[in-house]
Image 1 (cartoon, rainbow, N blue to C red):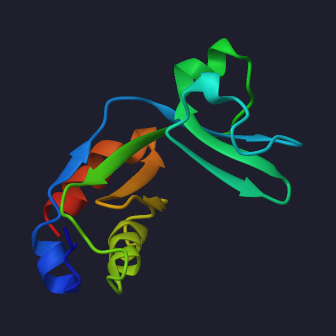
Image 2 (image 1 turned 60 degrees about the horizontal axis):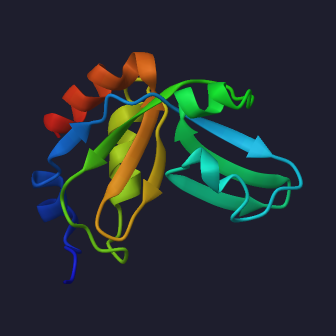
Length: 130
């Protein structure tokens, strides 16, 4: 199933949905991909400085993991192609105009935008009106 590549069609069909879960980004020096699987991270990325995990705040708190900031996730329910050009720029521009930070992770089918929890409702409204 091929995703949409036309940016204008994608923007019309965004269908953003806000997840109620609070998420955090944790970095674990010396850890490698596969470590901390019991934490149920929804995403991970191996960097030179350590393993970054995106996980529910509750899980990080239970394991006494440190983090900065609490985020909410807005998923775009449009099936955009990984080869689509300009979606990340368009979304981050819409949010940046209102001083909302956007941390975007692309899945195979959908893009997921992590915004500071206090900005989540406002960010959702902006994306709904895009």
